[in-house]
Length: 357
Length: 119
Image (cartoon, rainbow over all chains, first blue to last red):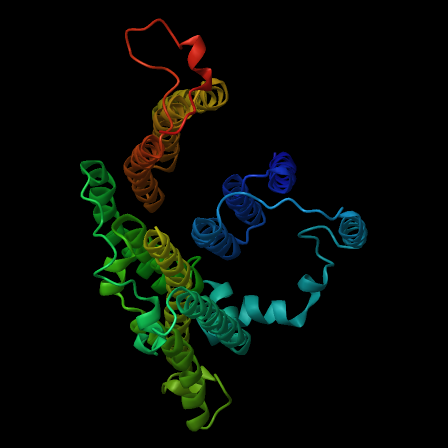
């Protein structure tokens, strides 16, 4: 039965991936990509990697789809026809794919006892000793946040950098557009990123008061508190079950993005100004690094949580809590910042089109 | 005896749910236009989820898993019809006309197969 499930999911995965390649409408491709991510998450579940599945479902199927849609709102749903015949890329991908498939023949069967993972001393240590050393039931969390805390610090920094880069790139294009449109009015532009990204309140029309929007409005108001509550649950329950800062951050950001999709960007930015998002982006990484520096000041190694409290296990718990909180804040801020970037661009595009008419 | 009863009800619920899912799939493929399709997707799918999760809840008994299942069903019961509504609403505003017009008419109009005209 299990083999049937995995073969079925794999076939579904390949079929969806091929469909993404063949479909010409980019909206359809985006939806299919979401399906691919979701099937991938299901495969992770069948492999007992629940934390990874959770992340894949939240990031791949959730936020990425929204961000793709935000991009498509800017560039339109039609793929540009390519003039070049893609023979060389095709051969290259076939060759690389062939090598990768050939490499899988060397891989041990999942779960067999003689895999490098099973024989590693670290596995033994994580599975047996972590329960005494860290006393967190979810071993994935203790590996991620404590044993490999430095790794995770790097990942958080990557997300931080991505958020900053997207904000920089999108606001850069905006400035050029504005210069093109209105020569000589550049002096009026305020320098802060916030002023460029925030939609001009006097120009954007208020969200349409159509009675047909009533149902989404009411349902969104009903749902958003629970989405945020679920975000907190995932954040602070990560020690005991699947979850943690990355997933919680994405879920939290999804709450804000839902609000923005239903009520408009303007209201969301009143609720959560871009300036706050920027501070949050940095604050999360700072909190993570700060925990490391504090443990250094207390006389240990970087990110050695044992010293944070008199009792090493309590110290580990405190350290993991703070570090996961840092990850959650940064991920939330990065996702919201990226969304603001795209959504703000399309609002300005709309405004420019109106002005051009 | 109790267990047998639970198992039988679970089977009934799950099988009905699966049948509704199948109907959803057929409807999504066979219905003529987007309105009828999201109708199929939105209604039967929600009911199928309810039935299947009801069956699962019967199997898991009075545990935390059941509570989570109830939460998921409540979530889907609210979101799925809303998504259907929002989709239909957006499509209508975008100017796509339903192929099937009127309720008293005898089936879809042959001439209106090309009715995907924008306003």
